[in-house]
Image (cartoon, helix red, strand yellow):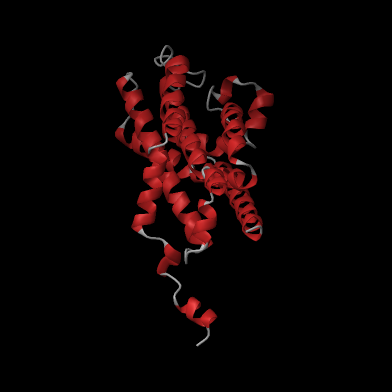
Length: 258
């Protein structure tokens, strides 16, 4: 048997995914103070600034402003957490960690899967934290609304985990968060997460429909509005495909340089 064949026979199960590697990734993210600040504290501050004083008011469509802004900022917290987690590959590339991993039997797909799982863990922390803050501030919703909106915000953050990976493979570590931070705030604003789409005006309302945050925000708020449109799911899937495809191409390009 040749050395190549022997190496192929030693391919790890599940591509190299294991609980130890995943646990290390999660611990590394949770120990990052900057990540915690931006994923938990900043959205909470935005809620106290934009939502707390108006939480008992009603929107023009009759829905609760407090519920609307809490769910919207929870989506923002989840997308920020997932993006930040994904973009950590830029730091790993700069430190040589990615190069070391490529010397192991770990397959590229397994590496991306672990990153996505770790990003989902961090975004779950962000979702739970925002809901606790909202509940303590006096926002009330039916249990099924808390659950459904939270699940949508959490699972929808995969779109932004892919965005973080995409940008993390394209840019150096010293620039990635400087660009992603303001970019996420702009996407959240255009997607109707900082203010209701109904009061943004017709022009911005149309622009919102084509932004990555729009579909997730609309789906997450669906339980309180009682509305649903299949185009929201299309929005999520299209942007997920774009970012995953971009991350895959950037990963392959980065690998060729090693």
